[in-house]
Image (tube, rainbow, N blue to C red; front, side):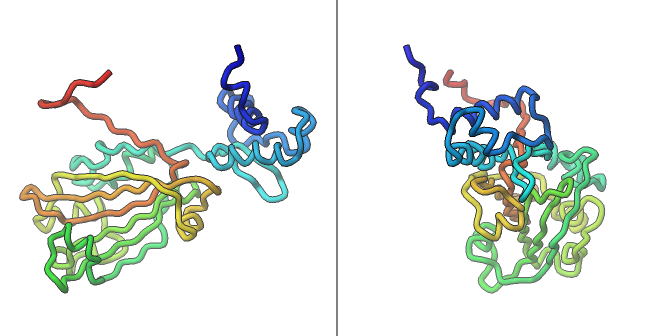
Length: 260
């Protein structure tokens, strides 16, 4: 009996074969894949079919095309974002960046930093419970890991909480924004993250140097004090091909049993 795989389009069969070769180590990070001419000869297909097969892998973020050189296995190692450990007060409260939980010994650079006072957008003002006309401190930056842009972040904080502090400067010092909020009596003790995904805008794709067809992950994090006051909203845009999202937590009281 024929299998479903037998009915795959030719370009998909080629893409699957190449992906398997990458996963088994036949082609390692930085290795060049067979070009269109080689695929045409090996599989007896037309150039368009070979081109489609390579395009599938590019859109998945598995490979990258280098103009005039060919198609190569991506050498970038995905970043494991530890969603819970990174926000521990033991980290930022001791002067460490929350990014230190993710990057290990890899090279991290933060660029395109801007800090400004702006009128609060309606959706931001509603969550931060701001009165009409109140302003927010807006911190925009891009995170680059091992030379690869991976994240765009925009934080909004009530200006009434941070005016005159180093939060309004580019460099917020050891422990970052959360440590500075704690020094002013507004330490965040609870966080909520909402996650969704979509295709990137043209500007996002350019700033993150993304391959065509790669989606972005959107994470909106709200930080709260012990009194339940929201003190920061951080809207993040992640290159989905550059991230593994990891959440490690215990089952607590009231946890419902799994369905299967």
